[in-house]
Image (cartoon, rainbow, N blue to C red; front, side, top):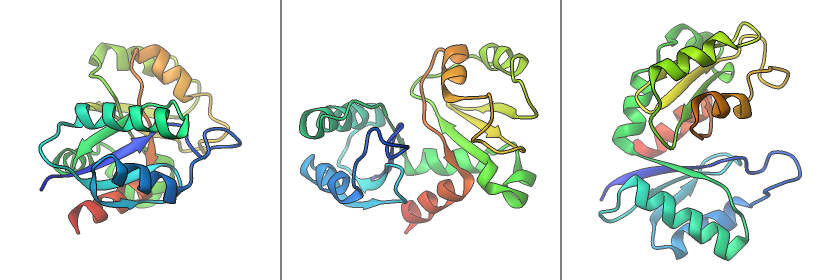
Length: 180
């Protein structure tokens, strides 16, 4: 049976959009997903599903979150093969080894043009770097993420697409669960 990862956007950051991983797991199981596991507290699910596309699973989870928990947040789903490909395509291998907590993988809900990423790169206010690979961005924050002006809002405004980012350590943990 195919394995997938689902990433919830903007949950458990500060006082808003709080969800326990136990509730998230129960919601996913109640939605018919199998072998559900959570990864860290930032809204990551690894699961199996019968013959569903990532887009269909996104809609299923977004509807269940809104209906059952009153949580309206985008969900990005990737198959295990798509997740592995995203990790393998990382254009920042040096940063993945030397500073994995400041390298982010940001799967996007829709495809974006390279020209939009080039426009984003022009407005980056600091030393951050961004590259597109497939339907995800790779972002390097050498001076830290918390104080950076390269925010999700800026990224989404320039790209016209939403997504959710995970640091390289979390991305690797997700991959390990998908492959187990």
